[in-house]
Amino acid sequence: MMNPEEVMQKYEKYINPSSTRLFRFMGLSSIESRAEGWIITDTEGTEFIDCLGGFGMFAVGHRHPKIVEAVERELHAMPMCGKVLFNEPAALLAEKLAEITPGALQYNFFCNSGTEAVEGCLKVARLATGRKKFVAAQNAFHGKTFGSLTATGRDLYRDPFRPLLEGFTHIPFNDISALEQAVDDETAAVILEPVQGEGGINVPADGYMKRAEEIAHKHGALLIADEVQTGIGRTGKWFGVDHDGARPDLMAVAKALGGGIMPVGSVIGTEEAWQGLIEAPFLHTSTFGGGQMACAAGLATLQVIEEENLLRRSAETGAYFKRGIESIAAEFPQVIKEVRGRGMMIGMDLVKEGAGGMLMALMIDRHIIVAYTLNNPKVIRIEPPLNMPESVVDHVLDALRSSVSQVAEAIDDL
Image (cartoon, rainbow, N blue to C red; front, side, top):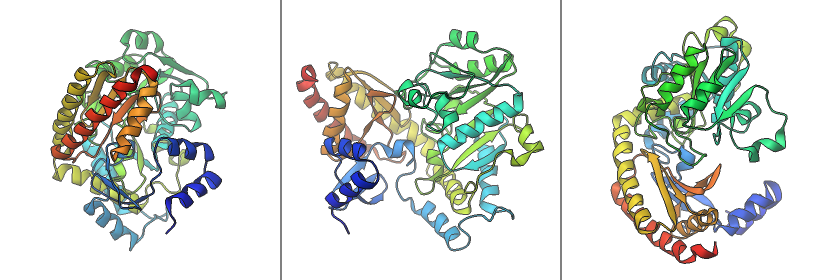
């Protein structure tokens, strides 16, 4: 086994020198070795509490035994589908997703990631409506492939790759008036996150997603819910739109769906939205999407969430966590401006951008993994496994209070 320095040198030489040096600077010089539950252990035997959760991927924790067992079973039978015959895990996962998703969502197209799921939603919306215009939100994050990047609402990621797709309008998030003005009879779809994740854990007003659905449908447009980060129990319900009772026409799901074991995503749509693919099913395909191991992981993940009451635990432990952070914010208003979130998806909005990097480094030094959001470096995100016990949350809160106290002492110099 290589020592950490050897691994980082290979990262610098063969992966990316700039990101490697940044990670070094922030104190991220450990090499992952093993993980279980909410603990990641490095090659030196140091244990870290994972409060980042793979950006929401590890909803049921690391290496959940029931998901490992399900994947191993397929590994020793037929791990990848041959694409000509049918496979049972795909059929069962599609059925289960149709059962738990809101409204009339029924049909699934399996892929490998969140950005692929968003790409699929955009294509299906064009096909279903015959239109080319989309309305998205400023500060949104939908992925970094060309279509999803066009929908993403931060120019830092968009500008180097222009020209992107035509026909996209970005409006302020959580602004119904702006949405009403932007959607017209040429709009194919409105695409929104129920809670903006990378934008800074921005929670809209109650009813926002339901009104977005109504506005879209008034003009014959579709509503695309990007549930890549909010879905599969993260906000305390199966999906973020469930808080409003919204019924999207298309939904993008990924991250937590694979149980932290396999990469799997899905485009999920109503029969009406799916009509174009029903007529021409090979307009959108994927070699790896829908493989037995991935779908078995997805099905096992949904079963674990039900069996272990993780929707309830996400809501209750998330509220407990958020109250604890709000108490720290009240003690140190010169560091934390606001605390936002739903369930186990919480963001600390700091007063200065430099405070985010410092707080992240201090928490990692205390062996707790957190990170800031991609579109807003002032916001530190908390997205741990949904099954994290309150005793562990208490330990994290103690470490956070100590770290914020240190940031407070240095805030004027940041």
